Length: 183
Image 1 (tube, rainbow, N blue to C red):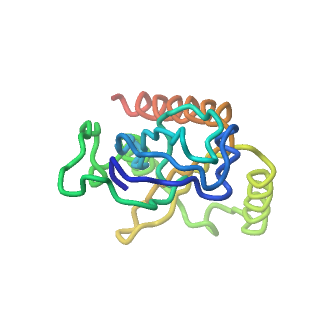
Image 2: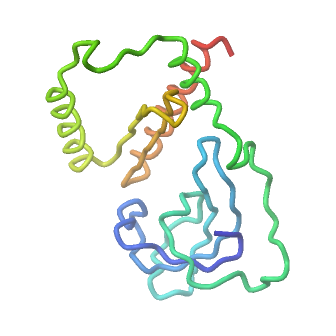
């Protein structure tokens, strides 16, 4: 997605925008990638579109929208502020998590005496809580091709208040991780 595109709100994301409806149109005024690698866009809602309902123009996640028209001036590159970190650069939070995991020995599940059924039960409970809630944050660790643990952070919110709380928690988590690694 790029600045200047005409977009419309995807069905299912209207709960994030309490005054809007699926299909409401907006123009992407700016685009960036946040420090965790998520595409963010500044949307200016089309005040003349029949589905407009006084939603405020704001920064939000690009995946809430689908592009329905390219920028009107396709040949001219739109103004973009350079992101603090490009998509190919590693996230400082994820790198700190990797460094922390590398410092701590990790054993096989059987060696540590962890009950796999209990592990799956926790996953099911967490999944149910995500479905019933208005927001979530999920941190996963998986072995990568080089057997090092790869960390991924997922989050989502259905309303502005939950999203603000989640963003503060992600910042706190990142600060704690960076602090524990002496950065």
